[in-house]
Image (cartoon, rainbow, N blue to C red; front, side, top):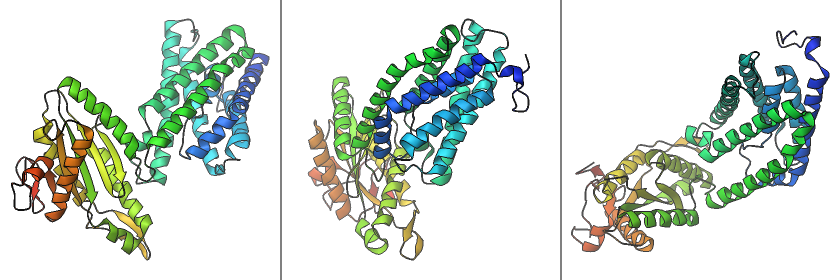
Length: 417
């Protein structure tokens, strides 16, 4: 039998069995869209950013079962219907549809190329075939992910790589979807293309589960910064505090407030202020670890809960972390949109109040109260400072506070920083 040469199919490749496979996978993909139509439209309304549509089940199965050009036909049929029925009514721009479809086509060709490495080995009954399928999953996911992330970064330079890649659960969902595609391909190989329809019920249920997850994320995320909102931050902070109490560990709460932020809004407009808030959110995500809890507390206030690692005592290191964040923000030179064009701001700074568990309090409300008092003391002392809450109540300094490890005096780092 002849093979694909220069992207063209020789006549022996276009067999009735392959045409039936194209029809079966395309029909199943179209029925999947129809069954999940209301869900997909809701997802588009909730979040306009790129997200998984779960159609990889059909397109990846096509990559394993068909030559690249015939697999491309499945992609075009499924995504054309998806656009007409779900994306266009939601106002999805045509150019984004073309790009999304093109990335899937390239991912399908990459997976199909890897699948051909198996040669005469059975993809679904031999160890060699299983290894090739696993490599095809990696190839498909990598090509699709890299192209989408590159596009997000080019169209939104302010978007960090970490945010462009997305959450770990989204990557896990993509891999699970591709695994379902591999199982589907095996079923079609053994029983016939009509068995693709059996994948519809679990896939529709999974689609609805993804919608619930998307609503949860939207409800817990601050729209301007991408950080947790105040309610979601408190829930996660309470959980981290309970874990620290059980492990007899320490945690620290940092309360940050932008200095003279009202002047930014008054001079350049609220859109410029929103851009500054977005940049601050990116700095905070970059300066803390994944296990730390970061949120926007309201207005120009941000809050961070630092979780201690094994053997770490945050009572002595939290101030240093807070001062590192303060210095990083002080060095920022964000470019914002002003009434007369782009403007570079060189005077963005924050004041920070620090409270640690259990030294400053044993519950979250008390820690926030102490951190807020320390923040007020930092403002009163001249701003762009870090103050530890314990000293705000002791009144050991001229202004009611005293710098501790990692705190600052007159805007300059002192001991431990």
